[in-house]
Image (tube, rainbow, N blue to C red; front, top):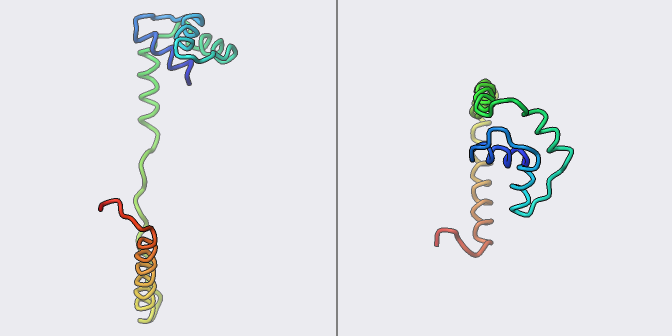
Length: 112
């Protein structure tokens, strides 16, 4: 990733076809040693290609990738009988009480 970032920085700087030495120079200027194998692979894969076209192609590919959540699932239907909702209400109350107690144990609040 660092090799690609350096390559793209050189491209933004006006160097349309950065060499391995150019990328090494950028990386060494910030104290990073280049990995020869990865750098050679990157240079060979990007050789002769236009960066703007590659970015546009990548953007189109990313647009087709689903992102975000599907939202929460619906609540489960209660079982037959009237006792289930009452039991759930009691459980929720106990959870709320436990949560409040654990907050008190901390001894501080983020909003005080």
